[in-house]
Amino acid sequence: MSMLSQPTSTDLGDRLRDAYAMSAEFMADIISQTCRRFPAAGQSGKSARVERLIQSGAWTDAAIALLDLELPQWQVRRLVYDEGEWHCALSRERELPDWLDQSIETRHADLALAILSGFVEAQRISAPENRTSVPTVRRGISQLYEPLFVDNIG
Image (tube, rainbow, N blue to C red; front, side, top):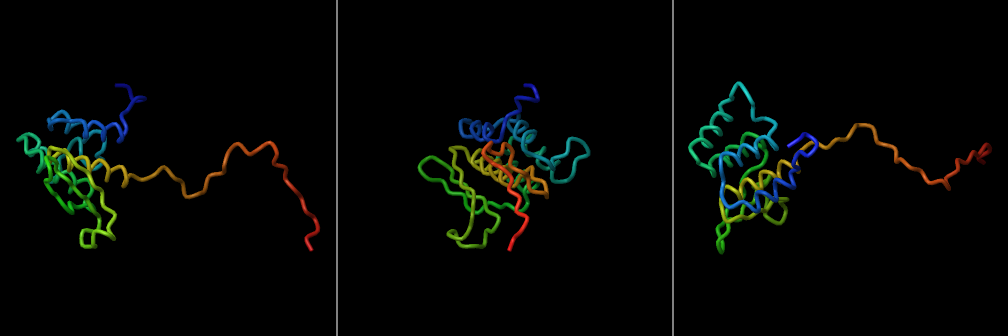
């Protein structure tokens, strides 16, 4: 895959939704596409823990540890199993009542994939936007636009 066709978080969200089960390769894809803190070399304690959990196939624990490493401001608010699916809610303000909280809600038949779906969405929401501190000027001003000079304002 070339750098020009790098998958977006939307593509990753679709892959998570369509996945049947977790694998080490899929977890590596998620980490490479979404994680900024997960070091490539020189392991920190938290990232080494995530790697040990992945190696042992502890997908749910790895998903929660990855959330703690990458997005410590987000927490699991609710995990519910209902009619064959895990419903996961992630929140920045877990102590607020549901109706005041802006949580991310995901669901999947696999618990780890439900948590990772929420993680990818939280990562997308939390990503810094490419904005400058100076407002941009709208391009393509209409041909009908003519500057007007008023010399004597009264």
